[in-house]
Amino acid sequence: MGEIELGNVHVADVMNPDPPVVEKTAGVCKVARLLRRHSHVWVVQDKDSRKVLGVVTERDFLDLLNPLPDLMYTTGMFRTRSLYHGEMSSVEEFMTSPAFTCRSDDTVADALEELWLKRIRHLAVVKDGCLVGELSMKGIIAAYYITSCSMMNGA
Image (cartoon, rainbow, N blue to C red; front, side):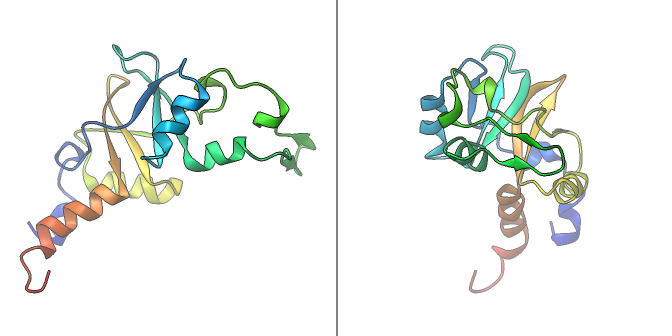
């Protein structure tokens, strides 16, 4: 498969079927532990249904550590999502929601367009609203390398 054909491949063929996941009731420390190894964590309703509620990225977590709330110049309101301005008892209180999603039968080209338009690096792959995997920029690059570059000399 060459570089042109990769865009026609289904997301299911290049997705990570075992993404990092926490339930919506997970605490801040559990999320921090997962973020030590992953750049993001998907938040689901519960482990059985895996209904996607949101995502927490490294950036979201670092925002919690900011002692000064961000001034929202357009509205004049302060953002209070900070560990310094209140207790956070669960991930549900600081996750980004809704999570951006795609389906496993979408093409990689369609998913890439979504990633580019939204300026994000990960999409939750869902079936009937439930998480079945994730598609990342890194996964797409790996699929491209495996299909196009690994056969070249010096790769």
